[in-house]
Length: 128
Image 1: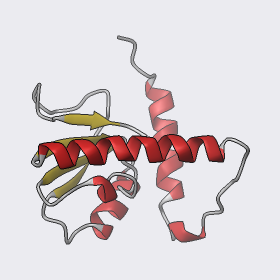
Image 2: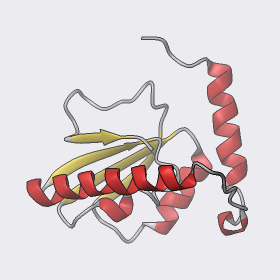
Image 3: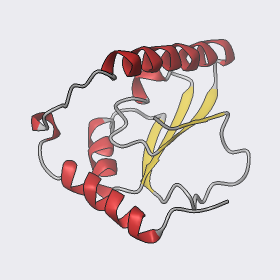
């Protein structure tokens, strides 16, 4: 398996650290012609995940490259254990701040190519 270069990872980390260093609500959102297609894909994906959570009840999920957790946290149920990992410490800091009241959610700074989880730790792993 080919891994991303360390230079690329440093660039990604710096990009998201800069993005989430301040008030992320002021970041302008670019709109392009792919937005409708992307939104439909996200809605379809969310429906699949919510269906799995509803069917299985208790489930352990990993959001691989979670950012601030805003895409994965709305998908979980009360019995869902959600772990979010991201290379950006600023993103993880924001996620921890936003969702500190949820007992079944945790976030950690981690290189997605070098996770510290044992095999078969999660029922569902995803990345937006």
